[in-house]
Amino acid sequence: MAAESRRSQMLRGVLDLCLLAVVVDEPAYGYEMTRRLRERGLSTVGEGSIYPLLGRLEREGLVATHREVSDGGPPRKYYSASPSGRRALAEGVRAWRDVRGEVDSVLATIEAEVAG
Amino acid sequence: MSAFVDECRQEWKRLGVPDLLAEEMATELEADLAEAAADGVSAAELLGESDPRRFAASWAGERGLVRDPAPPKRRRRVWPWVVVALFLVLFAAWLALQAAGHSSASRGRPVEGMQPRRVRVPNVIGMKACKAVRRVARSGVDDWRVAEHVHGYTCDLIVVGQTPVGRAIRRPGHPVMVTLRLGRN
Image 1: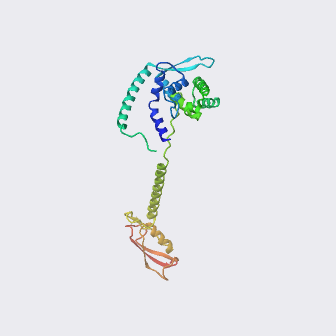
Image 2: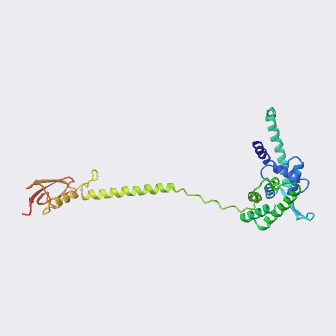
Image 3: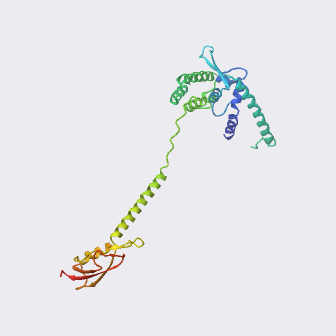
C-alpha cells in the first residue's frame, strides 16, 4: 500500500511529460493515450486519471485539440503536443534526467533486495 | 457506464460548467469508456477513480471550467467582543456604584478622601431626635453630640437647640451640639 502510494506520488510529477511524450509525434484521443502508455510500460497511472491532467495541459496551452470523426462512433477529441508543449517536454525530460541521475547516485549503494 | 457519465453531467451542471463543454467532456468520456470496456478495462482502472462526482469535479477544475467559488465569509471572532462588552458593562457598573456612593456620601457620611471641603450645617431645631440625627448625618457634619437631654436619648426627644446654628458652613466632621427636650417647650 505504501509502495503504491509512493509510486503514485513519483508519477504525479512526471505524468504530464509522459502524456506529452505519447502525443508528440502523433495525435491521440484519451483512451488511445492510455493504451500507448501501457504499450510503453506504464500500465497504471496510479491514483487519479489522465483526464484532469489533460484538462490542465489544454488550459495551459501545452496540447492542441481537434475533433475527428471515428468509424461508426461519435467524433473523438484528439490531443497533440503544441509548440509550447514540445518545449515543455524537452525541458521536463532534461530536468527528469538530472533528478533521476542525482537520486540514482544517492541510492546506488543501497541493496535493493529486501530480505523476506 | 452511462450511469457514471450521467453523474458526471450532473456534477458539471452543479459546478456551472457551460453545457457545451460539459457535453463535449461527456461524449469524450463515454466513447473512451465504451472502448475501454471492449478491451476489458474497467472504468475504475481507466479513470483511477470510482467516484464520478469527484472525477468530474477534478477534470472540470483542471480545465479551468469551474467558476471560482465565492471566498468563504470570514467568521468573525465573537469572543473578543464579548470580553470587551463584559468589561464595559462591569466598568459602567463600577462607575455607577462609585457615583451612587459619592452621591450618598454627599448626602450623608462623606467618603474618606472624597470629602467636600465645606458643608452646610442643617437646621434641625424642632425635629425629633432620630430625624435630626439622620439629617445631620446626610449633611456631612456628622459628629452628632448631645449636649443636654432628659430621660435619655430616644427618638421622641425634640431638638430645641443646636451649635453651630443651621445653615452655618463648617468643615466635614465638625461636631453639631444639640439640646434635646421631651416635647416642645
